[in-house]
View 1 (cartoon, helix red, strand yellow):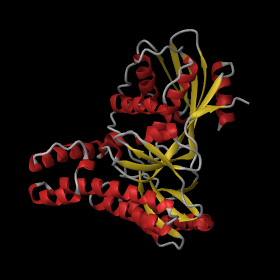
View 2 (cartoon, helix red, strand yellow):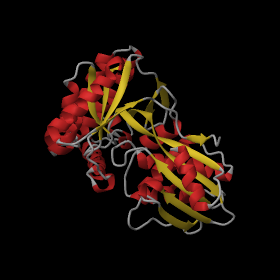
View 3 (tube, helix red, strand yellow):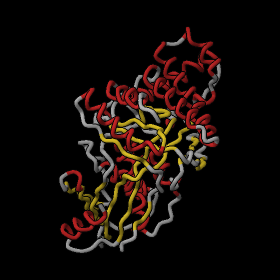
View 4 (spheres, one colour):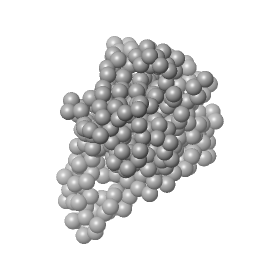
Length: 387
């Protein structure tokens, strides 16, 4: 991919780039729809990534060319950055550039070519990777020293303001701070984090159902609004002020069940129980307990399907097929849901056979050719050596 982007840059701009940045996608092992509820998550960065080649300009112009969008070109001034009214891909780099500029950081205009191999719409955070990659690029161009947590927070804010997605901070956080060979436990309230080693004989398979989804056009924002409403309703019932579902016990929720709309009760039950599953998953990983970790992943999917109602026929089919295979400990949807991918915990020595069988069975049942990736925990966003 690096060679392709370098060649495209030289062809378009007639000179070589001065730097290249990369930012990985991510897969969330467990902890879904908990990040924007100030809960716990356990994601890891993956080998698929966004890459940007760039060189500074002597003026305030920004020129972006997206290889994955048919070499679509976008131009704007650093002093006039507005959201693209069509909701296009370029709102992601626009947003982080604008926010870093608003923080009174100085950096030049630049020419850039963007490419990548993260499947778009698969729930593997191609958009968050583009945000973080752009932030790392601007940091390098301006000789800035941005704290990685602050960068992640700016990326989240940019996605909220420019892109119409009320996302939490998980994606940007893990893409910025990931460590090779580790997952990342994130407390999305305090932003404390811990690197977690996965069991040595475990492998992670990502299965793409090939059903895409657009977060800003889905029920994602609706679910966030439902959770906010639920906290207000619980506060009225218990005459308490709740900052998040971390402050609510399952006992308190059960006491209020009859006074709540059932759909709001279900949303809250998922979030509260999912937070507990994340912490239990970390303990299972520390014990090398693959069976226990797999059970928690299975429970997570059932909760997302029946309580949070963000699964789909395709996701449920993929999960069911995976669970029927020997050597699969757990399978669940990953990401926001409504389409995209599942994440599967499997025996390392059987991973390739399991992957082929899942693809074969999914095609037989749906007529769709799925993509299955063996995911290795990778490092977070960084500059790439030019040599």
